[in-house]
Amino acid sequence: VYRLVFAAPGGEVARGPVDTLAAGAWVEREYRVPLLRMVEGHAFDSTEVDTPVQLVDIVPPHYPTALRMRGVRGEVHLAFVIDTAGRVDRASIRVVSATHPDFTEAVRRSLAQARFRPARIAGVAVRQRM
Image (tube, rainbow, N blue to C red; front, side, top):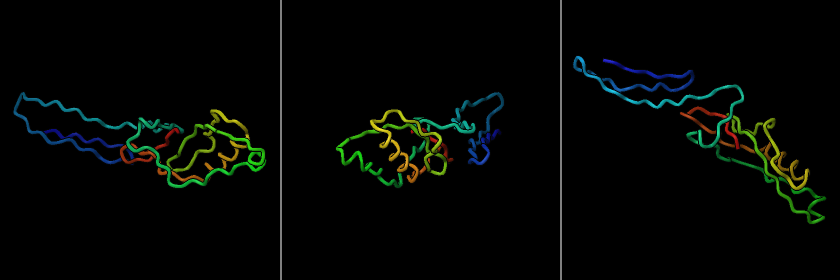
């Protein structure tokens, strides 16, 4: 009789089935166990998580007054990380492209107030790149 038990610190225990085998008999089983790369600062891609980040609440960015009065339209593309508490890691924000620095600053302020449900792997909250 063999019983396999897999456990990770702070994670749930996964138990394999019990097999009673005749002498000389064998059973092959495959167990998929999520291995979390809990390296300090690591962030997962959305394809690597069981449950991706979900937006809970965000304050829309304030349209910069001077730009609005001049009729300037804008666009900002950012890359950032949502931490395990569901907040934007401000140090991770990287501007991919922006039509004006004032738009970028407005979006940064909005993201600072945003709330998310963090990504999860095997029920454990993890950091996710956005």
